[in-house]
Length: 132
Length: 351
Image (cartoon, rainbow over all chains, first blue to last red; front, side):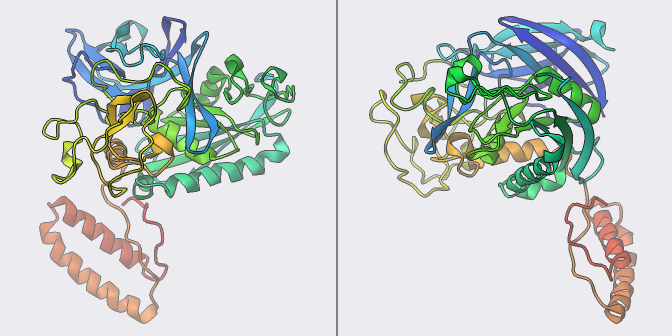
């Protein structure tokens, strides 16, 4: 099946869709398309022209306002740290569907203080204009 | 300290379980390995694959997974190790610019993510997950995209934990942020239900998200933290494989629950049942419909007899070949006939 590999870059709050590439591969199955709007976490949603969700996948928040780092304590081998100036790149996969129009990212704030807050739509991109 | 500081040598598929377009493809990339050290990188990559496939549920899902190793020779060995974090001050010239001490955090080891993406996109276009192994024995790494680890400490488990996040959307199940006894803001979770499958604030056995895995006799909540100012010090009061709701998860001491006392997403114990289920649900579509049977080779005369028997059984089964499971059985018998003298030890040959 054809899949869209979406490559994003981020710096602070600004997120940019850097490239859209069609790839012949499979992707993981969709998570429920009926979700609680008040949930916390991170997910990507592919929508049609009418705003209806076509594919949704829960994943770890790839926008690193905090990072997980190995610790020196074998009983508690990982710990988290805030990132002073978040910036980086990440990739999300969605199915390449003819009726797909936009891709939206939902996220809780990644900071320690707000990590448990409800997710909100933080970015949306028009795929029709960007498809290469 | 950039892509000018080395060469992409090429890609070797070290686990081949079928076409990349049909399987879940893991790509392992190295940084800080000089050309003469690439055999060492190959050994580290294999070490990780062995650890992954020994970890349930990946042991039973291995046929869904391909693994590719991208060999990149760096000019120098190791990673930047700034003096500011107590390091040696070394600044080796490496292709992906691996460096410790990001943000002043000693163990935070990162690489140039865009350079990694560009290389992997060019080498293995159908990739799902990237792991970067850095040739350094200083403990360090980072989650995110891509996951990065040095070859120190429990690095294979750290990498598997990070894949749990990025490939399967699993939450951290540990109950602290910076560390037990260090946090002052992680007492009680206040907020909505998390979307991740392996943490919850709901302890109602009738409505909670992993209710199908909770036995009627299991108390709910299964553990409660008596002092939300600290990480719960109590030992596990129930058998290790009990699925319930254990208080303390996703960075909070209280009001957030994990499915089992221990888990890969908490403390590098084996994945809990809820995480295993999520991984299985994600990877099952990448499995083939039918696989060759595993069997020992037979001698000439037994093979002749077996081939006659199999041919007879296939003739009978062909009457029901509209049933998918019967069609698979026929393919398996044909495979046995064709390979009777050789046998088969590989359970991942798709038919």
